[in-house]
Length: 302
Image (cartoon, rainbow, N blue to C red; front, side, top):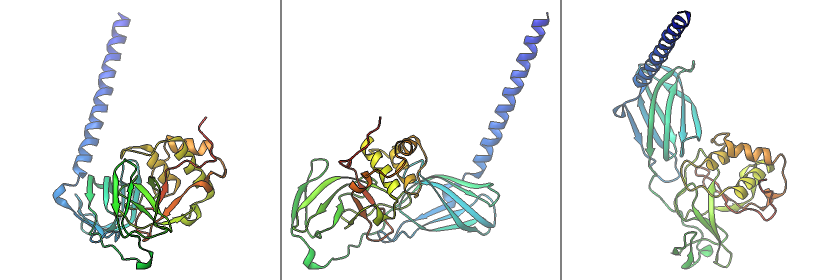
């Protein structure tokens, strides 16, 4: 008889606990739903001219809040965490200026007490019109034909000697260099190193440099080299390699398993950082790159 009542009491308590959990989940879900910003209550203004980074997000919050606002979001890929903390709301309205083009995920607005004011699942801000600058005519090459990373034959004219070019506008484009004799060399994949900046237009001229030219430390560059030597170039928007690289460069990302593996494997500069080829943006408003090629002197994953 005692066992019967004990079992009955256990069952009742379990039901009560489950009911409380469900109630909390319902309340939390209702709160999030109430703070979801309707698509009719926000407007995205695209970038006007390529590389200008003058996109805009205009938002009407679910409340008439006025005061300082923190915006947290993920940019380019989910897991690349970014924030804007200089925003102000007036009567529930916020204007977020100087946004880079690209994909935005999990956009959340908070007050200074970290109370959630509103959220947007995702939006896309399109690139502006591309306006190409004309370089010194003495440095231009004639028509060049070469084969890209995917085996496609490419013909291009008007390229500048001593520069490097991405073929597409992407986080991981195929890129190449143009020698002083107008020869296309070093065709390989590149990877973006700025999680908070947008991609350049196709065939934007880039300067060749080393890690110091991008303001990176020798240790950060050596860890980037380790990642390149131990992982393939990302092929999807959800690849953790991208987030790890951006966390290493201090431009976003996250301290995921790839990042932790690089930190554990490389505790000090080891010479591999010298063997990397970097490409510097001509404007500073678009992402820098590293060539996805393992240096000849490497420390492989054990």
